[in-house]
Length: 296
Length: 136
Image 1: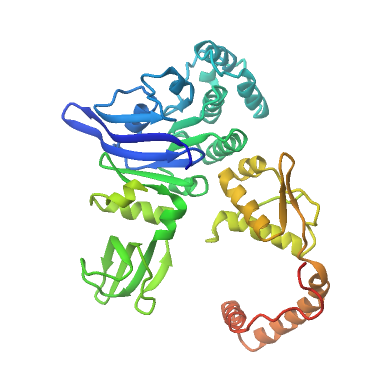
Image 2 (image 1 turned 30 degrees about the horizontal axis):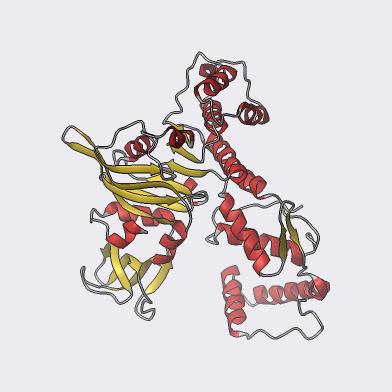
């Protein structure tokens, strides 16, 4: 079995009466690039902050390569985190931030990783990072996170504020780094189109709960869109395990479904779905996930 | 060395787009046995795609016997798809162009032609090559 990079069991975090994350159980195998997707307020940032040990869970537990990030310094050494909007001390230069990173991370830190990456991008090491563009700052934050040589890299909306070119350059740098170091990645984002090429695992959060957690290939293979004669909601369709979303006209029904067997192709026209179709359909329903989906 | 590009509008899976580009290059002689495929990391970076996707494409080429991974060195092409078929291409292309002109003269639109070619391809059983073009 593949080693588990991140594992949570019944993980929950509450702010006052409100659950920011609830009953979250998921497993991310090592070597994956996982997308963490969900509407604003779904609990994405909370999950990431729990995973890096910046927040204390109210229920359940989180393990990074089998260890608790709040208890075990070895677990924290395995982790890299690029927080939302890539916060960096604006009056520091990249060179100073690299020195700071080395002092704060005595184990495993490698200056040359950050220096080489920034040099290849033509980024000045002696300029205050507050004077750099958003895209350049994001690259500095990524280079710093990589210099820590993490086995699991968590990124919270790293490209949300960037223009399309800077976004592309950031993803290029990230994918190159994964190819070089084999880092496991969990990346939260709104930009589903960008993720389809990049991620091979999807974690979908909705109203503070895990709605899907599975390999992208499995999800795409098990979901499709059926177009056929009008079928009442709740009617059993052979081969369909779950109707995720249904819409009807007078004579026609369009169903986005999760299948568990062959569908009658004389009755239904079967269309493949994209990751975006699938995510939108699942976000449109508020049903509780079934055990098999979450366990995947 | 081959340089991959991706068609953003294509519904073909990303790894399969890479596989098809290698095959196309082999077919037209742009890539040859002995050529090294670009490093996984370089392709992932250039196209901003998951390195696992590139690996999957290279594994598929290995499964089809077109490429071979040499640990620590890279992935190399070991077979060609050109062979005798390549020599026939110019002639076939000329015939196809002539046929396309006839189809256009007969009033067929682009979509009509594509549909006709697709359905005929599907309806025609594959025949083994007769002139020694069988792959090794």
